[in-house]
Picture 1: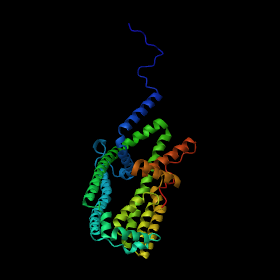
Picture 2: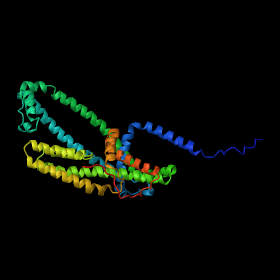
Picture 3: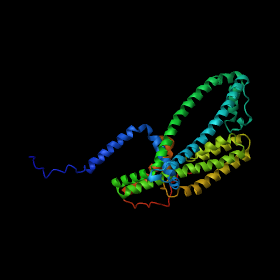
Length: 372
């Protein structure tokens, strides 16, 4: 006969304690993150883009037969975003290839017969005469120019091109993996969102769900207030470059779009373009371009951006500035969006911990991305 069971012993099917289970979940989560550490940046990019695109995507996605995840909608959105991101890079590549040939011809001409100093070089205040003297000593004299530019030849250009090609190959793999992750997140977005909310509620109750919703709003607000506004501002100012006669207006427009994602970045871009026009003697065009760029930035940052950001968490400018550049330094370009979102999440958790009244899910405030 078997011995009677101990009445004080826990049932064999009793669930594990809550604390040990949480420790196990935490340990396995950290282990999984460590295993996937080489791909976390790509996954972060994909998650940010999926959160930003979700309101638009959800209006077009339809479940497949039998309730299966949709295929055409996430595939179409992923391909469209890939083309949208590749187009500016293709334009930059074309312009760079054209300018590299011109630069190589200029170097060959300088080594052969020297290059006269341009007339506008001396127009720089204070340093203009010194720049002219340096140019005459190192570039106007063919022998001095050959010594200065001796290392800049076709071989050096080939080595430089090879290094650029290696970087392009590496970034292409990063880009393709990001698009693959984006497709999967969009396809299974509803299930992933439900699982995330259920997990947050399990650990933190109602605050967990509210926290995830506000974090998604912060990410979406950061993307809307950064990318879309920057594209619009840079494109409009780019027409100003073309009308004012700025050299390489397409490259300047792309640079303005890129710099507009940083605080005061676009102001630096069109100020440099205005300065180029000024030293070339086009005073009226320089003044008009600067005034036009300032008007576009003020309207975009004070009227368009708040309308796009809408219900995101409002951050003071100092914390937005720190979050933007801190995220950029820590995570790269994706830090432009992760940094402000993490800072907004920190403010939300801090208010909850202090016992302040929790903000509604659809606040009227906004996440200020930049000034200028």
